[in-house]
Length: 420
Image 1 (cartoon, helix red, strand yellow):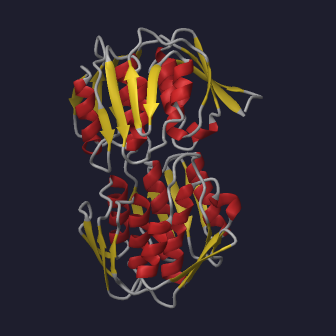
Image 2: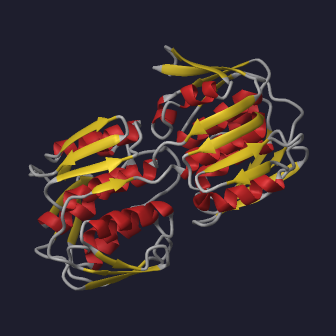
Image 3: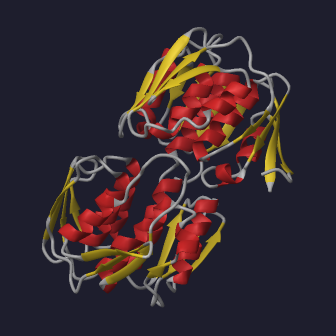
């Protein structure tokens, strides 16, 4: 077990590279199950979630290796169609194997997913989508069992926009007979990346990046080489770090087009931005202006940046209201920020954050991935030493974050800990 020790008050400056997108990787990897052969996916991040998905796919018979940023996936010998509880419980994205297995092999047995310990995030949209395509779906002893001799194209309309369900139905539909139309499809860059990989594999897909995606099923697909997109949430986290603790920080190897909502809000805080095709340079404001945000599906302000924004607003010069319209109970980082001296009140899905003159280091415990990021950001500007326990949450989605922050001048280290 590890923890982070952060000695706050160090001004950040310099350049930092963004890794490949975690959430895109977790969709691109299962997409390889749709065709036999060797796939190569570049810009793959070295993350715990990627490792978990690798182990899951290895239990299905795939061969997977990661050399630097290049991931190689060999799906020739896939012969097992069961995703076991022991792996699926660690990560909700494991359900992404459902669509590819069902579409290519006609059968999938996938444990009900686990992952972050917050929020009701039901899988019903995934299951309803498979049923619309003609699958027989049942639940048995904690497992989803889906069967279909051959999936048939259909119209699948989502009551709410769901990234996971959109991706799963896309992967199921590319080998189905006939035409599938997905209504209220997710617009996220990770879904566009998945669709572009599927098209490169030979799929017929139109409407990526819009709310209506049309898929004409094909008889078979083929392996490809593909380059993953940058992680927009990691990029956003470093930009907030620069705004909170910076002199001037340049975030490289990112795609500013994926960050428009966040960049707009950062400008409102008083931060000065210089945006180019593959990087964003941020100069910290003298004082952080309070700025309200309300999360919404892409291209709105991302729920995955809500915790980091609350950390930033805790050092603003006034009061800010942060509303999460995606997940109503994603605020478990708030009590830990309060331990550092933040002034935050929660009512249902709304946080009222009153800026304070200073935060003070303390021992805090992360409860999920983005909560971890918010505590690290707060620790960077807190007086004294902050200890952040349960570093494994951070390792799920940020690649060697302490090394990247040290490169910017932060005083942060990972140390052994007996505390859970």
